[in-house]
Length: 514
Ligand SMILES: Cc1cc2nc3c(=O)[nH]c(=O)nc-3n(C[C@H](O)[C@H](O)[C@H](O)COP(=O)(O)OP(=O)(O)OC[C@H]3O[C@@H](n4cnc5c(N)ncnc54)[C@H](O)[C@@H]3O)c2cc1C
Image 1 (cartoon, rainbow, N blue to C red):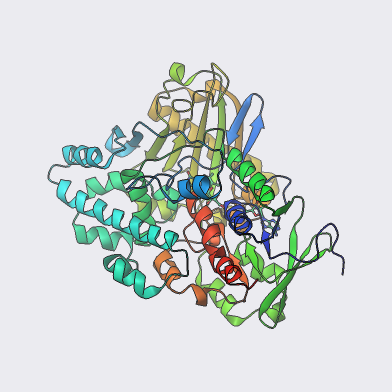
Image 2: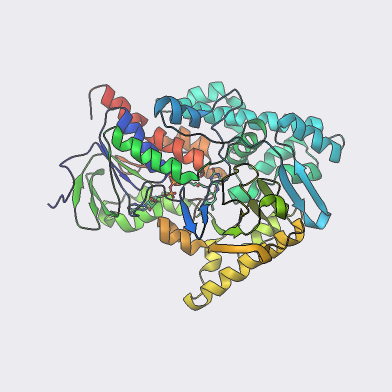
């Protein structure tokens, strides 16, 4: 056996240093265990990182940090980062509304950030809608409380406790967003203003699991939302540093190629250099499709694992543009941090269109400068435009066509944003990068370049997964963290899923086991 530069034994091996992997590693290390994080890239963070072009440093992914704050005060991310890991991190709080346009309705407006103001604003546009909107948003807040109950629960979730404490929510966990909003009888014009975050979650309302969108909507309307200050690479770097300070290890340029299984339980991993590292616990940031199809010998694979794969629907990816502009945000008139662009209220049509490579009619934008003064050099600004895209639509694009295709589709977003905002963006582009599913597949190794792992459909709802956790693990000792973890995809959920996944091992260790 070649163990290369590694020790004889680790309490756990973490595959990947995305937010899920780093928080799993940090939580194990802060509780006295010795984890080894193996990362195939030469940097930590997965998509929570940055890159530099010319005089600009671009955030790759996270625009909104939710669950740092909470309905009642500071949220679970704050508690984990500050109270438990003692990380020196600060995030600026968003303090002004979100720009929203709906082209076919000639609508350009700014949606207030706070719940009461948002309800009043919607009622002003759609008279008589206030009561229904309030009841719906209150219900979404209840959903967020139930999710926080799952996060706070330091032991395994006991289904009966969840049912007792959050009965209505457990019942709603089997519903789509549309089934819930139908019950509240919210007028369509009001829903158009509440559904704008669907581009973050990737599914239309009659397919999306309510717990997912309910949580997102509550976070966006009832809790403070924060932004990464020095890009999320700062978060990743500080977590990686903390992991080693706490006694964990992290090895870069090290890809896990194989997971070893014996009698239905994991017993180690093999790296790309052929090193064998023994362990009884593996936390994987790599998605189940990568793990079950490529990393485990098929004779060791229980049928249950394959059934799980077949049940899940691969999620969506992004077409993401990172643009450095040669004028300040004041000079250009980019006065908001967040932008949402929609054509009309027909999300189902927009979702169906994602099967094809055509210019997207729904997309989001982020200009950090109004909130973060030093986000780019003086006299410049940054604009990040992104739209969800189905990786399958890119499957027929040949290597020769790839560059042209992504530039054309990206160019369409720039032109649409220019028209709506009345800013000649193309004239001010100093630097630009366009990322497509291939980019994400290459850098984070995700299945089909999906950045959201699996679709958040009703049968794969977070509440249901929480209640059936044990059955979710077809191979003893192997847990998934991050996008494919217990919670939904996203920055806060990936962090919390990494922490949650390790709770059982930490408890066992505290009782004297390892
Ligand atoms: C463009 C974009 C915008 C986004 N905006 C937001 C937002 O505003 N708010 C929000 O909350 N979320 C947002 N997200 C989502 C959020 O960033 C992700 O859900 C989250 O960061 C994913 O974390 P993860 O733990 O799943 O790891 P990932 O970031 O997916 O990283 C996985 C890591 O594992 C490593 N790895 C994979 N396979 C192996 C292997 N075999 N061996 C070793 N290492 C391996 C990879 O190299 C990578 O470092 C956005 C994502 C994108 C792409």
